Length: 403
Image (cartoon, rainbow, N blue to C red; front, side, top):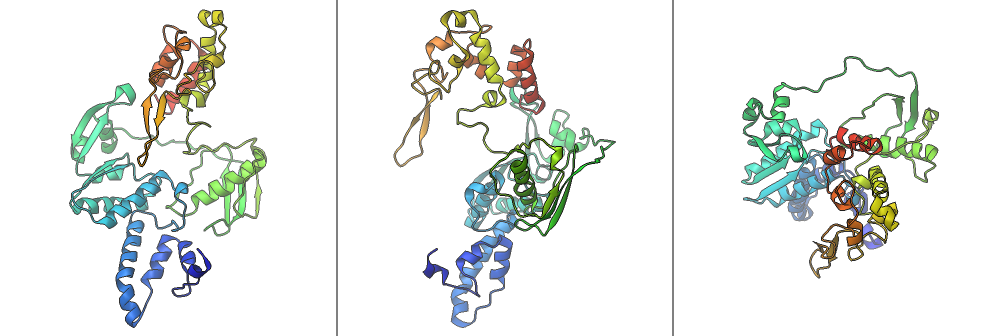
């Protein structure tokens, strides 16, 4: 804001001061404003609208955000709940709303606020569809459609429909099995105990109040708490950044703290987050896990490849040689639309296969490199069952539910 805008104050606060506050703090500020006479008459309707919109944001569990928070720093769940709050403010009727896992990142305390908001939308006269795994959301739904029974080729069927009681009564529904208690997640009977600790003292980033942290070495530790309580500041901005700076020699800024101890127990730190995988838009699970390098090596070792002098680089869609140059190995062509979003169409040269004709003439056990990439992890695991290096990586993907 320019100097003129910064010199407009309401009860000793300008717009820049207000946007730095959290939503619940701003709500309290406007809720306590008392303006007399003509000023009060002018501001009454505006204040009512401001308080109503802030209340919508609080009801969807976003009371901890500041109004100046950059959109690209919001999680998927936070962005979705902001859009939800704006829709509630619109007060539309007869609308079909579709939400994809809106409870992501929410503490159970805030989860009921979100569900109350969804039922409010329904009660206005709208239809609300929620794709969700959360137990409370499932139990509060008026009607449930359970899809399964498994994932990938083992799914794609409607296994149960109806009210929660009908899903629970269904023997075909895996969801119903867990809701009814027929199946449960087993809790370990014995717990491991730590003898060594990683400690950080006096952490004071953002809302942290001189926190002393002690993490047991060699154990599985869960950091929990209500949304906005300081979990990310303590772990991501303080602990991880400090470990990355010391162990990985990364040039990062660490949130304020006094001292630490126990970093010598570790040789490196790895942050597994929800950012897109890979370094380029072409990255996929095969390239990211390294299994594609092993598969390309296999293709380069076939008799036909060796007779043509092809190396493993021939089977990469990131470099010239074996890829389709019309689409640069993307398989898609971007068509720029003036005044409209760009659209992508299948490459008419390679038909979306990413490779040129000569590369696709090379086959391993009757499959081209493009056909291998189209396989599911489960299919690929069976196809490469005789090659331990490949099956080891594929089995790991299977074990984390990515069949």
